[in-house]
Length: 156
Image (cartoon, rainbow, N blue to C red):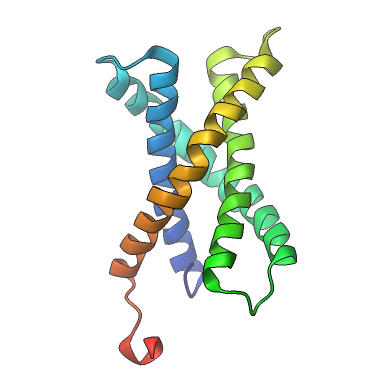
């Protein structure tokens, strides 16, 4: 979303920030349970996770996800179909990348690395997809439209 690179970067930053925040909370709760340390642990890991997430989104995942999505949808398809298709492939790519980051950060490359990684991927996917489609995607679009409203003549 966005009419130019600046707007696209702002849209990506909002989306990524919200997804990293909510997924960090989810993963800390999975790891430690609902304790008083959740906020502290999320705060400590948020900035590094956000940097990795933004990098992976902008440099790797977005290009691949959009490339796949645009092979499956036609320009004449409804906007909702395009958005859902891109969102699905973005979630798939970001879950794979960010689960790798989280697994390495919390468990290292130990003997159980692959078990931890695949378990993390599964748990993250079942949270990230509905979170993206139902909460973060619509919230990001709402915020973005408040920051960059569509001119009245362009909406008609």
